Every structure is written in C-alpha cells, then in structure tokens.
Length: 156
Image 1 (cartoon, rainbow, N blue to C red):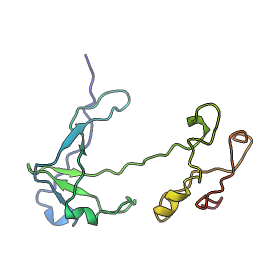
Image 2 (tube, rainbow, N blue to C red; image 1 turned 180 degrees about the vertical axis):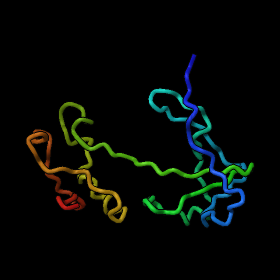
Image 3 (tube, rainbow, N blue to C red; image 1 turned 90 degrees about the vertical axis):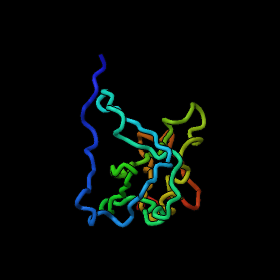
C-alpha cells in the first residue's frame, strides 16, 4: 500500500499565551475558501491538512499590517480559525528562471530577465537580488549586454 509520512507541521497553540500573539492576528470567520494541500517530501506523500491555501485571498484590514516581503526576524503572521485552531504563515522563496536553458533553440534572449532582475531589485527596495552574472567561458555563447535603464550592475 501507499506509505505516508507522519511528520509535518506541529500544531501551533497559544492557549494560555494569548498575550504573546502578534498584533497582526488574522481572525477568520469561516466564510473563507481554503484548499488543504500537502507537499511530497522525499518522494513520500504527506497527509493532507499540513498546508492550507487561502484561495480567494483576504481583504481583512489586518492585511495592511503585514509587510510585503518577509524578513528573517519579522514577527510571525498568525491566523485563528473559527474552531480556535491557529495557523502560521510560512513565507516561500519564488525563484525566477533566468538563462538560456529555459529558452527554445534559436533566440536565447526571449525568456530571460533582460535587466538581470533590476526592476525587481528596485521595486523591492533592494530586498531581492539581481540574477545576472558576468560573461565567462561557460556562458559566452549565450551572454548578452543589457541596455535596459534598470539593468543590474556588477555590484548589485
């Protein structure tokens, strides 16, 4: 039969410690649409209920207090479901593909970040980093010079 990992996220419980909850607590009323998912780990499927995705997003006023980008020492983002269960948001890293390996044969500049990620670097207040690399013998056939006004420099 199928083997499932019995590990996963430990329950988050603030019972008796409510005074330590962060001020940006999401109080869900049950009208939200959730998708319970599970990520495979080491090719073993995990039990569902380990990950919850808020499929419709949220328009609660508390959203304004959540920073747009998670930093290492930011306060956790906690939500409480109507049954009293707590959820903690886990930030993820979204890696942007950038390179000729993601292109079709032919024009190697079609699907790359033409500015090396410079626009994202500027938009995030330099929180995101650039993804360009200097020309080398490894990439000399596919490397190109960007003329974009937002192009990253060697020091960014």
